[in-house]
Length: 130
Figure (cartoon, rainbow, N blue to C red):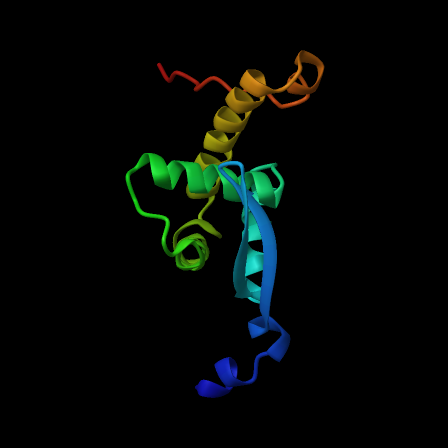
């Protein structure tokens, strides 16, 4: 049983430190390489860069009144949530994609020049069922 876990490529659990910008402040986040890969997958699924995804997640956590003392831990748990509850569950993936289109299109419209903001896809309107 443990050979599945013990036999994994050591590169997956190599610690990787990256510089990120959160709420306008540059900081370092240290995570295992496998977690960085999962975060990149989540960001790509939402159609944004990893930096933009991390910044948005950080802002949303602060807006909920959660302390940011362990942002790396939050990111690891976000990866677990993604693996356990979202990935492979089409309704969850579709909801996450829909939320991302709405959130990031609104942000783009508010802060980017008109020509660039227009390149973000407009959120789809929910279909009404009769």
